[in-house]
Image (cartoon, rainbow over all chains, first blue to last red):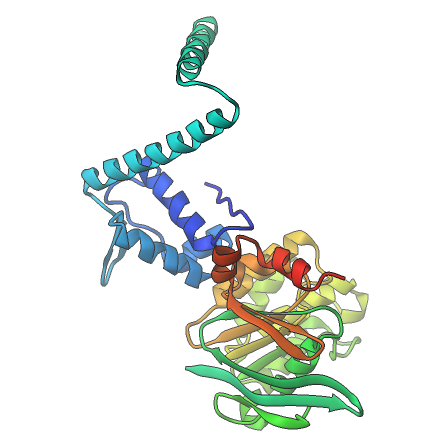
Length: 129
Length: 231
């Protein structure tokens, strides 16, 4: 999996977001062992200190836990993951609504359009199958 | 914890001041970008740390000692220009380094040469500028030093090799060692830096962590550099 680092936001924050997304979407399953800080840093092409900082933040968020001798693991608490998923969805929807507001789209307009697009996707599925 | 420390470090060449009253403390376990426009004093600073120049005033210490025989055993320095003999084969230079530095790891050097498709039997003079630079960097990074001083390490190498070299720097990272990289290719190395030091006309302009710059100014180090040093 690729890492995407923008140039104008703190790198550790971007790492936190991307690891969180991997946990929510199941790329990292509950209870999975994470690679070492150094391996993860190399994979992302970032400084090990920065990866360390990101993992410490994920520990604070309780999405990751450390076991003194055997390394870091993804939480097995599904409630925590579900909560993170909800928070992220709220954020994304907030950002989406903000953009729609800028475009001058009202609530009903948005809903109608969303339904239309969803139907369109279904039609596409019919054609494919 | 400090690996390098300076107090009012000043270096003049005749009437020209190359560095003026630099005060800094560099802790262990960090990767630091020493950034500044051409002629700002970056190489002078690195040469003072490497013990190739002597301060005009003030002091610089490595692990508590002034640069000398003891500190040279702890410092691995990559110079701007090559000092290796052109007629030598890479394998001969490796033997040379092994004799000279007790902390030199031959296996590490040989593995890196292999990764970058460099034949140890080739002579330096038959190599391109970029390949020569890679050889030098491999030699420097194959030491288990406490301080690495890299003066323009990636200027002449292609982007793919650049990634490999940056990865090499990250992999070699150790908690007790720090790396100081002087370069103007900021965008390329920004992701691996902990801290940056901006110098201009011999003076320290800014010293900060990379995340702090991104957090408080919402811009990259590269962007900030362009703003601060706008011509």
